[in-house]
Image 1 (tube, rainbow, N blue to C red):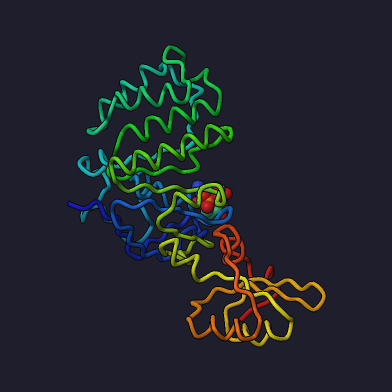
Image 2 (image 1 turned 180 degrees about the horizontal axis):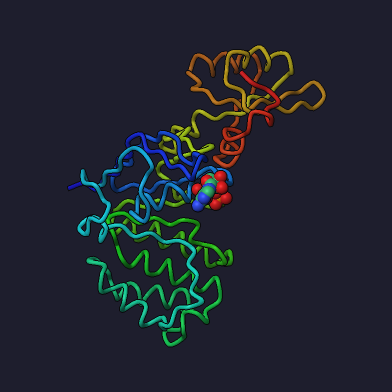
Length: 296
Ligand SMILES: Nc1ncnc2c1ncn2[C@@H]1O[C@H](COP(=O)(O)OP(=O)(O)OP(=O)(O)O)[C@@H](O)[C@H]1O
């Protein structure tokens, strides 16, 4: 049974405010997804729906072809890692690992202990007394060692320093290779984490505007640079995301499938076609209308 996630016309309203608008999304099992969106786009509204912490106002969610809500068989296979307030937690690190092990069917204690070593977590310390970054490292440890069919990390790195985040990313990739499963990474650290993603989902104002394999998405982004007039002619019918002019030289970021014919045309006109990073595409694809300088 594949643990595909299917959202069908899902909306979430908080009183009159519509945080998610009619989202239909199919996340195929066993891939690493990057979920990105600007502040308030709806990422932290969407993810608890998948973990059955909340229910949509309208629409339906299916995991492995079942309604996950109050469905023990499905919920034991979904792990949601998010910033947790541990101020009232009475367990020590060791006790916490044992507690999670009890209700996670694929929990690997040996691996959890390896991660404890990797992140230098003190087994005998109270979780409430750990630093912010260490609490996040513990969350990530529990999330990875659970080996659930679906693991969601919602900005799980909060408080971690750069070397610790690097360890976390490496473990995500290494453990995913050993045990392929669905991993969803919600993040603001796009340039730091883009190499982890197989597919990218971009949310804008409660709507999914992009869901694409990262290589296809990056192929569509291009920076066209050359003499002002030649660039303007070349990009006139394309979706233009951003532009910069320096003297007689212009560079325009486009979002377009550039055919071989188009690429040849660019070459003939002496134009350069350069790559665009996911971070740049994200910034410009999620611009608010009033932030646009150039439009199609
Ligand atoms: N309980 C709530 N009551 C009212 N509005 C809410 C509630 N929770 C979220 N919202 C609103 O829904 C929208 C989406 O919020 P959400 O937290 O999902 O965004 P986000 O993409 O996770 O943002 P960020 O990147 O800043 O964490 C925001 O406008 C937010 O103010």
